[in-house]
Length: 231
Figure 1 (tube, one colour):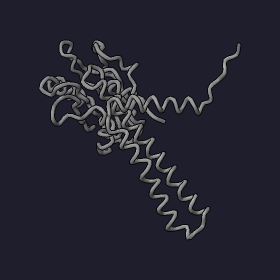
Figure 2: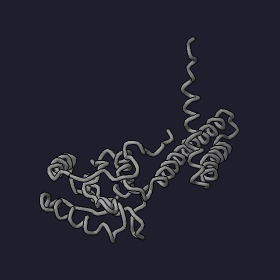
Figure 3: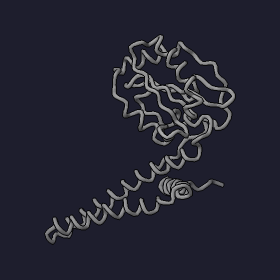
C-alpha cells in the first residue's frame, strides 16, 4: 500500500513549530519578541497604507501585505537567532562545546576544526584554533586560570612558524571577560582583517604542519550537537 506523502509546506511548518517549542522551554521571552516582531511591522504597514494610499484600496492592501510579510520575515530571523542561542545554552560549559560551534556555525571566511589542538587530560580544558582574514585565533575552553599555560604554549608554537601573522586569543568559560558561547561566531567577525583570502589558505596549510596529538574530550560529540536553525 503506497504511503501518502506529506506536503513539504506542512512539514516545514511542523519543523518551525518544534523549533519554537524547544526555544520557548529555554527562552521565556520568545513569545513576546515574536509578537512584537510580527505585529510591529504589520501595524506600520497599515499606518503607511492609510497615509500614502489616499483612498486607493489597492495601494492600502499592498502596504498592509508589505508590512505583514516584513513582520513574518523579521519574526523568522528572531526565532532563528533565539533558537540558536537556546541550543548553545544546553551545551555551554561542557567539554567540546567550542568544537560544536566551530563545526556547525563557523563563517565561510574562517577555517577551523571541531577538534582541539591542545587539551588538559585531567580538567578537559582545551584550546581550539581557527584561521581567517583576521589572522590566527586561539580559543580557550575553560577558566583562564587553568587554560593560561595552554594558551601561552600554543601561542608560542604558532608565532614560531608564523611570526608576521596576528594571533588573537579568545576565552569561552566562566570568567567575567570570557566570550559567551552563542556570541563566539559574532566575536570572530569583529576581528580586524589582516590577511587576504589566499593568505588565509597558506596560513592554514602552514598550521596543519604543527599537527595535533590530543585525546577526544569526553562529554558531547561535536559531530552530533548542532544548533537548531529556523529557516
